[in-house]
Image 1 (tube, rainbow, N blue to C red):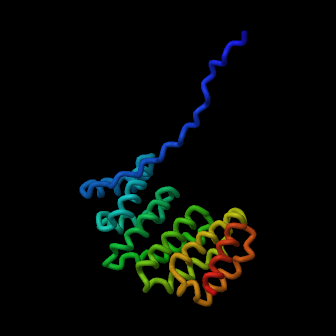
Image 2: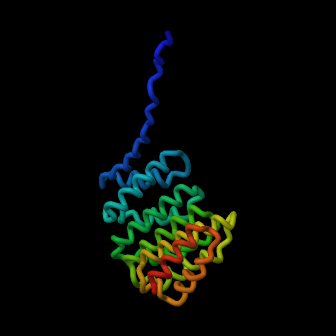
Image 3: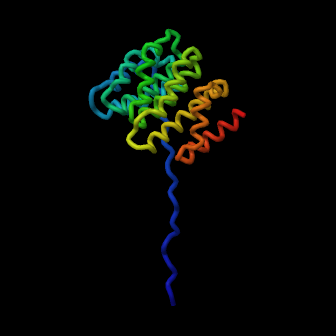
Length: 209
């Protein structure tokens, strides 16, 4: 008589959701900024990630350290630079002193830096800055459009960055998208070789009427 199989049915393990980084207590923010600015070590990456989450949820808590974080836009560590890029965008909501104005050129230069992740972070962040600083739209929108002329490692990287620029423009609303320069950019991307980008552009053109 055949023995019954003792094998247990396979149960698919569900991927654990990553816990959201904790909000750094106000008194610990200066220390986290110092760690993030360290010249080496992996602790600076964890500190940066926690500061990104804190700045997004409570910009005034991190804003007093704007200058120290802005200095990290030029960090030789790409990860530190990416974290600084995201933090600065969040701090725009608390920037009563207009400190972003002084670093905006350096910030926007990351869009055409040739590094896809740097460009994507700067594009997304620039869109967020423009959404709460209408007076900077005239400076930010042309910088977003410059991505079409940037040199990346591959043409596909460039197309991914263009897709990020389309999303940033869409988030800024129809008035921005109807600008002659922005509208022309959007229409041209209907023929983008990356299917997702072309679909995004066609959807935006349709919405513009």
